[in-house]
Length: 193
Image (cartoon, rainbow, N blue to C red; front, side):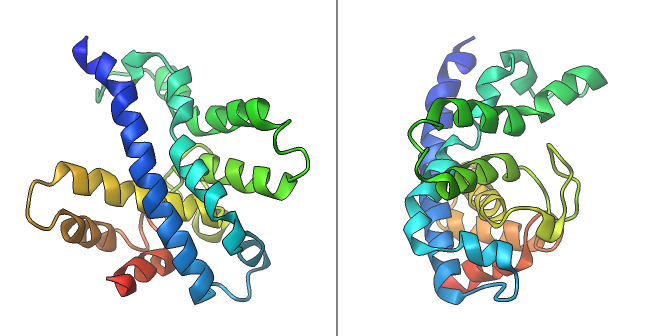
C-alpha cells in the first residue's frame, strides 16, 4: 500500500525530469532541422513550442490516473480486457487534458494539438509495437517520438546506480534505435553528448 501512495510523487518527479529531457531534445531537433522534407514535422518543430513540449512530457502519463492502481503492477495474468484498458491510458490522458485545457488553448489550437499529440504518441514505438494505436515510424507524431526517447532516458538513468547513469541510459536507448525509438531523434541525443 505504501508503494501505491508513493506513486503520484514518483510520477510527478519523473514527469518533470522527462519534461526537461524532452525540451532539450526538442530544441536540439529544431536547431538541427531534422526531417526537412516532412511538413508534419516542420510544423511542430518551432522553438516557441518548447514549453508546450515540456508540458506534454510532464502530462504524458496522466491517463494512468484514470486506470485502477491494480493495472500499474507488472503482472502477466491480466485478461485481454484488462490489458486493453491499461493500453488506452495515453489516449484517455490526451482526452482528459483536452477537456481540461480546451478553454485555455482556444486561441492557440496548434499548441493544443502539439500537446495532445505528444501525450498520445509518447507510448508508440518505431516498429509499431507500441500503444494506443500501434503507429509506426513517421506515423508517430514527432513530439511523441521525442517524449518517448526522453522518458526512456529518464527511466533507465534513474534505475541505474552507477557513476554515469545517463551514459548507460543513452547506450540502452541507442540499442533500441530503429526498433523502439526514432533513429534520428536518438542520434540527436548521441551527437549532443
